[in-house]
Length: 77
Image 1 (cartoon, rainbow, N blue to C red):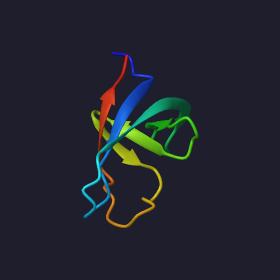
Image 2: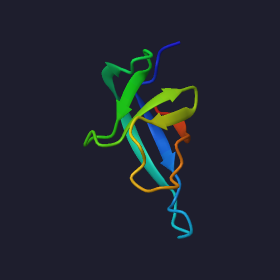
Image 3: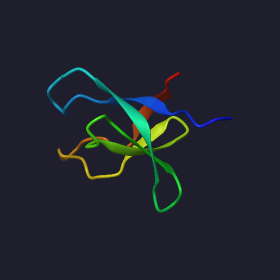
Image 4: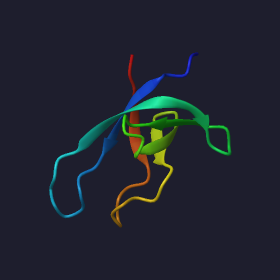
């Protein structure tokens, strides 16, 4: 099975704000983590994740305390 080249990653709204979910499209960067997992990033390159199955894990600490570090990732055609 081929590794998808892009995913839609769902980010929850801010805690306590009842804000809507945000969906970020990430693309394969051609690089890998130290563990060999492919790195995906948004167009600006500021949001980077590693994806295993349907779980995306940010490679940097969340900007806001309390943000989720385990996010849903949906492969895109």
